[in-house]
Structure formats: structure tokens, C-alpha cells
Image (cartoon, rainbow, N blue to C red; front, top):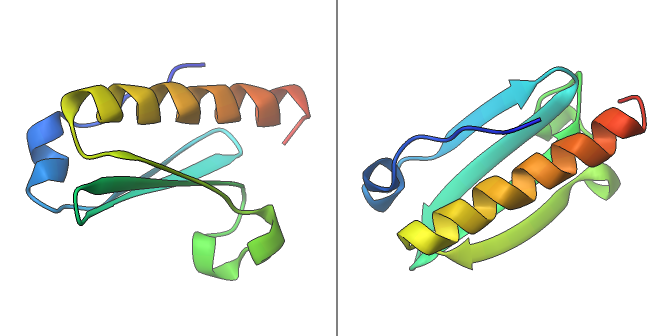
Length: 85
């Protein structure tokens, strides 16, 4: 499964983004030249999910970093989908 994200300018303008695909949830938070990606299994929102289930990775706030975040989120989604989440 492939996660599709807004363009780089959306994040460069300091806008957070969240989404879902099936039972997979994610959020991207730009700040201080970094793009923080957070992934977790549904059905709950991030705040209502056990923190032990949250997976976090940081990327450079660049076009390349955004592509890497998109690939990382897609791989997390595939892994959780395979596990039946």
C-alpha cells in the first residue's frame, strides 16, 4: 500500500498532516528543519492510543526527506496490514 502526502510546500509552511488507510493511522509534524512522522494502529486517534504502540521517525524537512517519510509510512502500513491491524 502506498501512502500519498501533500506536496513539500504544505509541510514547509509548517502545516501538520494526519491520515489513515484501513486500520493504519499516521501524522506528520514539521518543525525546526525536521519532519516528524508518527504511525500507529487504529481505530483510535493518536491521543487515545497506548504510547507503546506509537512508532516515530524523523526526517529532514526537504523534498528528499518528505519522500523518505512517505516511503517509511508506506512500509509501516504494509507491516501492520500484514499483521492484520
